[in-house]
Structure formats: structure tokens, C-alpha cells
Length: 112
Length: 109
Image 1 (cartoon, rainbow over the protein chains, first blue to last red):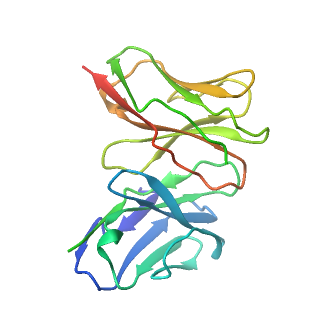
Image 2 (image 1 turned 135 degrees about the vertical axis):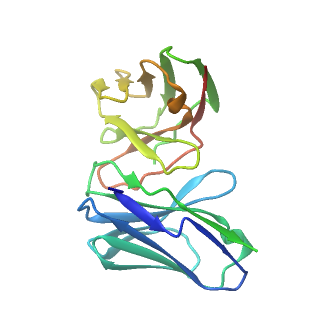
């Protein structure tokens, strides 16, 4: 059973389009995250949700909007895609506090 | 946020022990030291964490200096599957996880 699953695994699209990435966790965790890993391989947190409430919102353009319909899901919607949005996006989940984060395998977004 | 310093890269022979160092001289008293690793084309994977005492689990051991300004992740017998980027991350309970550049470990057959 996959603990944290993201779809799609690959996403190739044109500049200016709107796209969504879905994330689901079956671990019963109450906190979920989105990270971005750019071409230089730096991994940066974008958002964190705890029990469907936004608790971390890093300096991310407002074209990026996370949506958490329930505790097990955190989707990422991106409007007006730009070339600089090309990256690998990772979803993660954890129990609150010191518990380790579990990551998905990433969504590789390429903007043409 | 505590700053960390790790070697950019390290090499190990297969089946040899590997010691991955991390300096975190600005660590606060409440920061735990977490280690994650990222295998090629995969998401990061939790390895181990500790506060003051040395810690062991099925993946690795974590040796923490008495002054807590440095720590060492120990892989007892490196395998090819251990080739990854290893991240040392000090954090408190409710801090976000901040990934630095990490150490890229190569394992030579």
C-alpha cells in the first residue's frame, strides 16, 4: 500500500495553463505538506496544512493555491503556469510534532 | 533556524561503514537532529532522529556530540541502495523541516 501518493507522476504543459496535482495519504496523519525541488535540487517547503487548516505558507506566488478537502488529501492548484514553475513537487504528511514526514514520489512538472 | 554544514559529497566502498558528519553549532536546546535521505528519483525518506543520546534503528545509528554542536550518521555496512543525498536537519517539535544541500553519498561496488 502506498502511504503518500501523488498524481500525476509527470505533467508536461504549456505556459499560461492551469493545472492541479493531487495528493492522498493513508497513514491517518493530521498534517500535510507541499515542497518544491528545483533544478539545483534544493528542496523548499511551500505549504503545510494541519487538520485542513493552513499553518505554513512560505513566500509562494498566489498563483499557487493549496486545497485540503479532508485530512487525507492536499491538492495543489497552479494558475497561469510559468517557465520557472518547472520543478519536482513533493507532497508529504506527518503526525504533528516530532514525528517523521513521509514523502510521495514527486510530480515532475515541465513547462513548455 | 539552526544552520548546518555537511560535506558536499562522500564516497564509500560497498559493505564498509560510512560516517556522515554534520555541524550544527547554532542548534538550540530544544532542537532535535533529524536525518533524511533522498534516493535518485524518489522523495526524501526519514532515517533517524535524536536529541542528546546516541540512537539506533534498523537503518542507521546517530552519534550526537556531548555539546550537541555536531552529529554523525553511521551506516554500518553501506550497500548500493544507500547511494543517496543525506540531509541533517535540526528542528523543534513544530518547526518546518528545512532541507540544506546535504551530502551526496556514492557507494562503490
